[in-house]
Image (cartoon, rainbow, N blue to C red; front, top):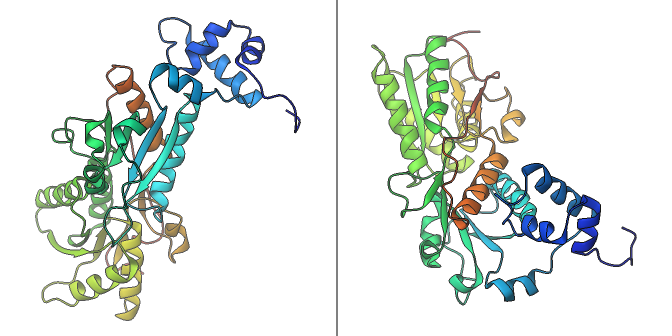
Length: 338
C-alpha cells in the first residue's frame, strides 16, 4: 500500500480472500480448525500478508483476556543458533497474530532481570531452551503454558518438548569417523549442565564402547574458542595414546581445537580429524572447512511455536524429533592420511 494510505481492515482482507469477515476473524484468531478449510485459511493469511494487515490486538485482547504474546527464553542473544530459533518462531507467530518477546540469560552474569511485573498477566505462553532453565524459573514461566526445547521428554516440568535428533547426530559423526579408521577419540564436551549435552556424551561413549579397540578421552570446556583451546591443549598433552579424532559438542569448540593444534605443531586433518556440531557460519570460515552436523535452527523455532499453539488450543503437539544432517568437509580423513 502507498505511504499515507488508509490502514487495511479485516473487511479488506475478506474481500481480497473472497471470504466473510467472520472467516477472517476465525483464521487470524487461530480458531479456524474444523470451521474453514486449510486452503481457505491459507488464502486469508496470504491476503493479510499482501495487504500488510495487522489486527487490532489491543482491542481483541481486551475482549478475550489474552495478550497474544509469547516469551522465548534463550541462553544468550550472541549465539547464532538461537538467532535462527527466534527467526523461525517469530515467523510462525506472526502468521497466527502473536508477538514474540526474547528473554536472554546473558553469558557469565546469570539470568537477566525479570522484565515483567507479572509474567502470568503479560504472557500467553513460553518457549524455553533447557540451557536457560534457571531464567525460566526466575520469572515463574513454568506456571504458564510451556514448550521446552532440547529437553528431556520425561522430565521437562510436565511441559511439551521439541527436540532435534541429537542422538542421530552423534551416531552420524561416530560412524563417519569409525568408517575412516579412527579408534582413539577425544571428546571436547561442552561444560554446560544441559540434557542435550548429556545425550551427546552418553551416545558417543555407548557407540564407541561397542567397537573393540577404541579409546575415549573426555575433556570439558566452556563454549568459547579460547576456553576450548586451553582444554584441548591440556587433553592432547596428557599421557597415553594420542587421539586421532576430536569430537566437539559445538562448532565454537572445534575452532578452539584448531588453534590448539596449530600451537602444538599439528595439522587438520593430517594429524587429527576434527568434527563439530551445529553447522554455524564459522564452520566454513575455518581452514580446512569443518565436518559438522547441520541443525535447522529456524525449523526448530517453527516447531516450537507450532507446539505452543497446539498447547494453547488444547491439542497434542506433533511428535518426532527434527532430523539432522552430517556435512562432511575437509577436517576429517583417515588417521595419518596426507
